[in-house]
Length: 139
Image 1: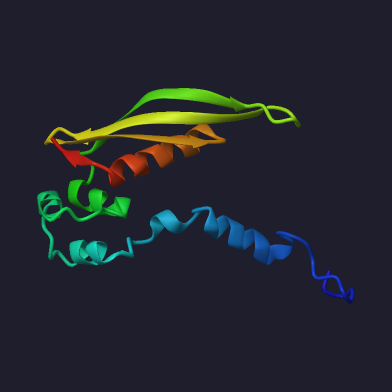
Image 2: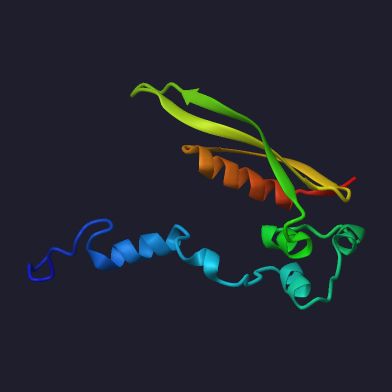
């Protein structure tokens, strides 16, 4: 490919494109440690904030789902309430997408509902779990 003058390759051509796409899709990202992006995330990781109630006391917005994972660990349970196929009828044909509704909570007074629409069912479920963690409320 590199020998021809003027041809640089197309989208995802070559070995580098494949490595980049696998890394971007999260193939090896789950093995890494959580790096906080927000100030609240850095405070949580440095143990300056010790409970979820401290976050709710000052009405701080939770922008990272890993903050909830840090406090709860495996105590949060999630349940798929419904998976609903959604169809769109453009002029070219039909598009089918899936909408997932998830209930999440620990048995200690924190609960929420999340929903997400995606082309694939597992992607919709994972997105709904993340959205539910971001908007969890104390009861």
